[in-house]
Amino acid sequence: MTGTHPAGSREPAATGAGVRGPLAPIALFVHRRLGHAQRTLEALANNDGALNSDLIVFSDGPRTEAELGDVTAVRRHLRTVVGFRSVTVVERDQNLGLANSITAGVTQVLRERDRVIVMEDDLVTSRFFLRFMNEALDYYEADERVASIHGYVYPVEQPLPETFFLRGADCWGWACWRRSWRLFNPDGHHLISELRRRGLTREFDLDGSYKYTRMLKDQIAGANDSWAIRWHASAFLQDKLTLYPGRSLVHNVGNDLSGRHGIDTRIYDVELAPTPIHVGGVAVEESRAGRAAFIQFMRRRGSRRSPRRLLAHLLRRLRGSA
Image 1 (cartoon, one colour):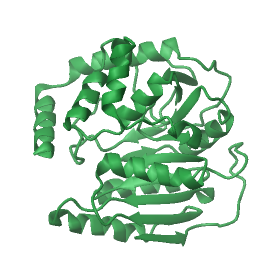
Image 2: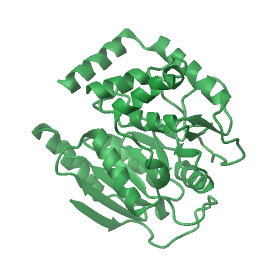
Image 3: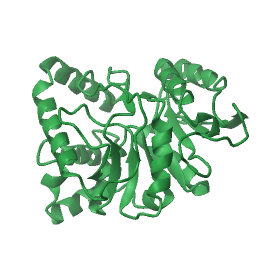
Image 4: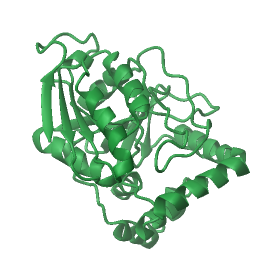
């Protein structure tokens, strides 16, 4: 079921952000977490450029009868959303699961538009998030080396450049073009075989600081339903880059065990950037400083995860795969 209603001005207006042409549509993926979705939508509506952005919300169906009430409550709220150029709600009759919902939804939007901004229902944004995404999508549109734009950056200890590139792709508030989404390969077997054949597994795992390869193995085995690890591997194997801000424009409020694949942690908490991020003026190549900062953060993260949180995460995954 699909419904559309106008919300806010239908006339183009100056964004004050230096972005020319139509703004990228926002694809938002929701399920049953009403409180999280409300926070995400409120923050997005407060963004510069929201009134000139089309919002397309993909509402996944309930997995069980017990979830029907929560899903219905979220859909009821979606009919009241305002603050965007238009709001379209796509209600799935069946539960596709996160991976299928996102890959199908992004593909659907990119059949009609040449770019998309992708959000999940537990991401709270700075008011400058949409500005950064649209400016970067415009700036790097014709640069085939760039696969995507990302809004979140880890709370690293080192100072970072205003923007920087890393090899691969990411998933906490991101954007891409039709040209780069064509690189997405859903076949985890092929991706891990290529990483091994080319001797890239350690580099892919950030010099062993984060077990991306294990995550891909788990996806193949059915232990997780991650589209993101396959998107990252697809871009990584094609030597494509993702642009990051030096100050985070996204805060993930879902690390509270409320989601199926969530964990209970504050390690990823960030302060949202209170001022705009300047786009441009950076070499289109992987940043040594950015990569080193991510590696140090991941190693520090591994040493800080408590046994209680590790046990809670393990039990959560066991329940999800039962």
